[in-house]
Amino acid sequence: MKAIMVMYDSLNRHMLPNYGCDWIHAPNFKRLGDKAVTFDNCYVGSLPCMPARRELHTGRYNFLHRSWGPMEPFDDSMPEMLKMKGIYTHLVSDHQHYWEDGGGTYHTRYNSWEISRGQEGDNWKGKVGEIEIPDSPFKIIKETPKKLKDLRVKMHRQDVINRKYVDTEEKMPQAVTFKNGLDFIEDNYKEDNWFLQIETFDPHEPFFAAERFRELYPDEDYEETEFDWPPYAPVNESEAVVKHGRKRYAALLSMCDYYLGKVLDIMDKYNMWEDTMLIVNTDHGYLLGEHGWWAKLNMPVYNEIARTPFFVWDPRTEVKGERRQALVQTIDIAPTLLEFFNVEVPNRMEGKPLKNVISADALIRETALFGYHGGYINITDGEYLYMKAPLNKLNKPLYEYTLMPTHMRNMFKPEELQDIQLAEPFNFTKGCRTMKIEAGGGFINTVQYGSKLFDIRNDPKQLQEIEDLEVEVRLTNAMVGMMKENDAPNEQYERMGIPKDRKYTLEMLKEQKILLKQNI
Image 1 (spheres, rainbow, N blue to C red):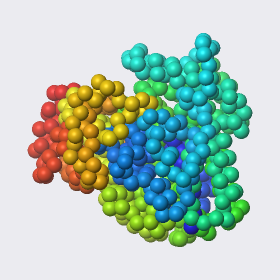
Image 2 (image 1 turned 90 degrees about the vertical axis):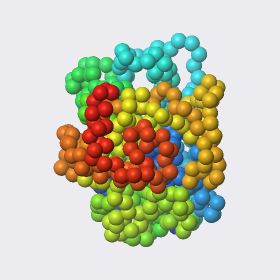
Image 3 (image 1 turned 135 degrees about the vertical axis):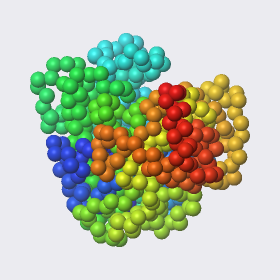
């Protein structure tokens, strides 16, 4: 048996024809829908990029324990488990976070790996001195801290340099990544027992697509500054700029569709559908002006971010062209692949194999949990979605638990490590104690928005908040149950104002709503 996973970054469900979009050119995603099972209720777990990839490896939520960071010594890694059982694993990617401090132990879990360079602000090609930088592709917001402004300027400068070296489509990172993946298939399609992960950073910003895909979305009347790199901020741009940005995203999505088609083509060519699982997924979605926001991170985790496109072909079931309503998540991918290759699924994994969902839409969970470290704790049962905000404006207490203290692009600074404690082992750390480090700045404090409840069955675009205290209480108690299963740190209950060892009540909720109004 063989398996291929095609993974995108920031792929929007609501921009695909499979989920109702009628203006995006994506014929190969339509074709994929005919060849696989389409999931209508797939949700993220831990956000954003590397936390989602830790879930891809470990099959369990990690956002309650830490933010960005590498695979830890105690983490179960799906590709490494396959490798240890004789299943060859190969990663091809242009996702530059793998080559940074906060992601440096993921790619080495595979038997082999290939990289293609040049995405976003990837520190790839060197250029000393001044270079000409055009008008910023994103608007620097006045309130943006200087540190973040400096980072954005630095990334923009590096991106200008990188683009000079990807001046044809064949040189672009996505194109190189898919070529590397297709080369692996050509060399190994006759062999058995392998897993290939083709992972591109696209359609993540900046929306840098080959010109032939931009031509699909003409914008001749657009006269404002080029806008292919939105800020992580509220929408302050004109409607013309917003439409232009969406077209730039659409062009990059159409490029993703084209290269997906090449994977479908080679599976057709060698009749790989008989013995090869195909998974097409993403880490999260992206806001393109919906709810008055760009991108992700700082705002409530609306469905445009949290509800993701997901497709699976399982040759054992031979089910294709059908849709599934069961609630599934990123944490289900690791156990699905382990079970497919007859490798035992560790009891530490919270995800479930999807074979029975694919064959008969079996129920594998009643609720799904998701969020950013230090932000909302979100829960959905497929009918309602509840975003529970921290109880106090300081968003405390909050700690990181790790043996490998790294942020996205750098290690923890010595001053962050002066007052560390040793925490007792969690149920997934295999007896290891971890460093307990007080979380610093940069975390998402959602107390300013307050808790939010949506009826997503009748209001899938989340245009109108509702008030139903009984539903909030019910979902909060379900949240506590899932947090216990995850062995969440005790302070997460305190931060949220929810009891760990007794029922959350209507009276508690009413008291907290009064307190939250006073704090905001």
